[in-house]
Length: 257
Figure 1 (cartoon, rainbow, N blue to C red):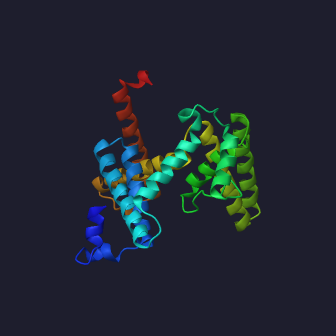
Figure 2: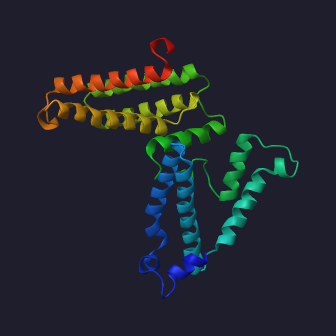
Figure 3: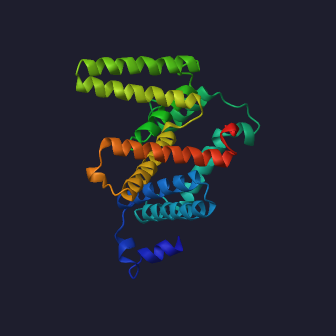
């Protein structure tokens, strides 16, 4: 806190002095994603660094709030300690644990909200927001009862998407595509998978393979801008075959699969 106050002081850093809570928000979001990347890659050194970056933002935001007379860092810490202590009274004070539904209802009262869907940030990536909304609904018992029911919903939404496409209705098609993605998020929850993370993995694999495909075409003297689809498909298949062979080698050969 002392460092931030010095940077914000009359002889401090012009950039730090110019910042506001709103101007810092995009940087905080970026740092949060960088921390998630570090955790995903199990890179402890990067995790430590990114945690520090986020902590800096927390301290910075608290100092800006203190400057405008709203609250200070001690208030932030005291509030979260009180909230977590109240929600875990069964562990800390020997009280009976609350059912999930009761917990959600009490949170509504605590926060002055009228729906458990309130408080899920609209700025979350859509798949992650869907997962979180579904998770909250499931905590009060509103969920598909079985894996089969969830998969049936996926197939139902796929059929409805196909029908909307056949009717050439763009608005309806967009709505049905959204419903299909929402149903897939729910099925992923049954598999203990977060759809947002699964899609990130798919995009990473695709971009990596595409770059390798470009490399293969370049080795063969073919520029991507003039390559035929058949050339790209052949190179793409070779990239996937190489990846598969590498995995088999790591596992000790095809028989190990």
